[in-house]
Length: 325
Image (cartoon, rainbow, N blue to C red; front, top):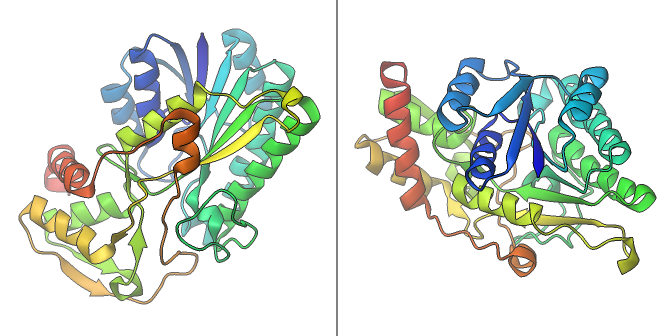
C-alpha cells in the first residue's frame, strides 16, 4: 500500500510519516516548506524523524504538479495534513487561508475523486466549535459560529468532504485535533513558546489573565488516532449515508493555563515571568474533546498527561535551540 501524506514536513505530518514507515507502508510526502515559521525547523524535523522518506517540495496550489505526483506515485490512500495553520495569523493574512485551506483542499479532493483514492483522512481542528459548543465538545454539536477565519476554513473542509462523499462516494474521515504538542512541535504554539521563554528567562504573555483551559494532546496519541482512522474507513454508500465521518482527537482532559505553566517551570527549573493580558481575538476560553466516538470506531484512547509530555518538550527545546532558546 502506498500512502501520500501532505504537510509531511509539518509537526503531525513528520511523525505520521515515521509511524507509517515503521509499520511497513510505502510513504511519499509533500510539503511547500513555507515560511509561516522557520523552514529550517521543518528541514531539521524531516532529517530527524523521516530519514529516507521521499518528501517532495510542492504546493497544493500547483494543480499540474499535484496531478503529476498522483500519476507518478499512484497512492492508495491519502493523509491530508497540509494547511495554513494558526488562529491569530488568520486575522492578518486571510488570503493564505483561502489559497491553502479552501482552494488547495478542492484541488486535493478532485484528484482523490478522479484517481480512485480508497480513503482520504484529513485534518480538521477543535477551532471549528467556536462560540456555539459547550464542553465537552462532541461531533454532534454545531460548528457554524467560528471565531476565526482559520476555524471557518476547517469547518468548510468538513462540508466539502461531505459533499464529495455524497456526490462521488469518496470515502473520507475528518479529524478535529485538540492542541497537539510534543518535541519538534510548532514554534508558534504555547508549549514551545512558553518552554523557550522560560528557559531563556524571557517573560511570557498569559492571555485572558490565565483564565483559560486547553485540551493538550501529546503527539504520540494523535498519531495513533490518525493511523486508527486511516485503518477504519467509513462504510460505503450502500450503508445509507455518505461515506464521510468526523472524529475528535483530544486528551479529554482540559488543563488550566496556570497548571500548564507550572509544569513547564518545574521541568525547566526556572520560574516563569508572567505578563497577564486580556483575551486575544479569535481565541477560545476552553476546549475539551468528547472522544467516545473515536474510541468506539477505532479504539482511540490517549494516555499521555502533561506531566509526562511537557518535560519532553522542555528538554527538546533545551537541546535543539540551546543558546537560541
